[in-house]
Image 1: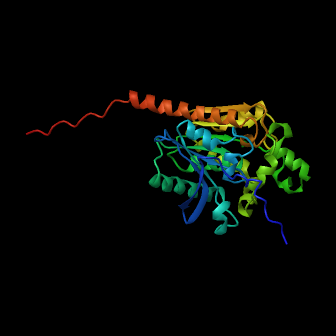
Image 2: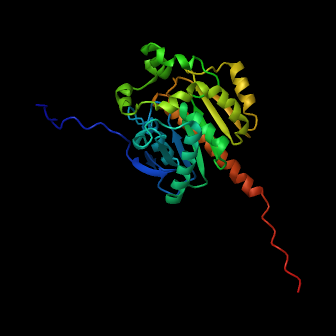
Length: 311
């Protein structure tokens, strides 16, 4: 017989105070996610998109109060919506094999429209994405107009390792690429992360080796402000000066393009000690984008009234 709980150990937290689970119907799927809303009408809505093998809770880390993008964004006046990508969470029931990036971009766009019908969104949507979610954010930006800006970490255009050999890596090497040095993360991170980890859907995994070519095709079609961040201990992507120069040259139509490095961070920035610093920088970038939008509105002449018809 299994021993009952004594009641002295509190249940593990799954999300922060002020953060609530939600379900959102989009393109024939029901997406699960987490939502945090400010006390007043939002400036804009930040949509957080997780990487491969993770879930939306990546952006609401429970190992330290400073980790949660959702609570920080809400305190700063944003609605923050972290969605489980298609093939993860609730949608895995209907799409266990997952979807391609193009299909995911279409679902995400429909999800944003569905969310806007139910909730105030302020001036519009920002995408804040990590790793494979960064691929989705760039794909969505290239395919669907209307986003305000994209901020992505842990995604580049040339792999630092052969993705085809990914499954043949020794487990400790794969772990190091995903996380980096242990000291970069709060105590309890790897225990708490067990609730965030999910299998990578097969169709998603099959596209991983194709990304460099896909990026080269979509990069010229990204025409919104974009910020990319590489962790100091990033191991999945090449991010030396020569590769960054090639990356930025291909994103030539982005009106604003920032490429930055995050000190004291591994690939999973939002679960590490550097999470708050990274999230503040990302939200600061979004603030700048909103300010530019406000300035453009202030300097755009009001439309002239039509002349009265002749008698």
